[in-house]
Amino acid sequence: MIAALAVAAILVIGTIFLHFVVLKTLAARLNDEVRMFKRPLLVVLFALFCVHLVEVMLYAFGFYAMQEFGFGEIAIQGSEAPLLMADYFYFSITCYTTLGVGDIVPVGPTRIVSGIEALNGLVLIAWSASFTYWMMERLWTDDL
Image 1 (cartoon, one colour):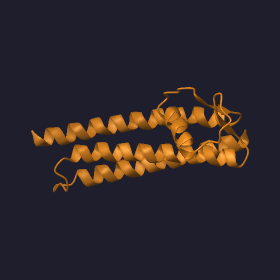
Image 2: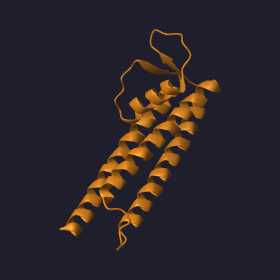
Image 3: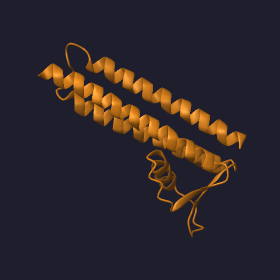
């Protein structure tokens, strides 16, 4: 239980810091008087999509590490087959987006981390939506 909370805390801190750095960099680069990009909003959307994928991968590696070190498990319903990295990624993205399909389930302390990932993903997706709205407002009113 303590190990799961430690893993979750590290992942939350890491993903929030990563998100902050990316958003701060985007805001600084796209608020310059001379724009480097012809379509800056597309840059924002692509960058946000990429940072979310990186954050999902961080959680996927966290789930993998938990299972490898024996303090948590993820299981495919009705299968004894070993998990592939794609399975960890799939599970992570369903947690991060709060989709929660249920064909791959956490067992033991991994349930704590998957629940915290859902909350963390919800916050980061909302932050991205807010940032996108702010950038749209700034960029589109400047163009008009």
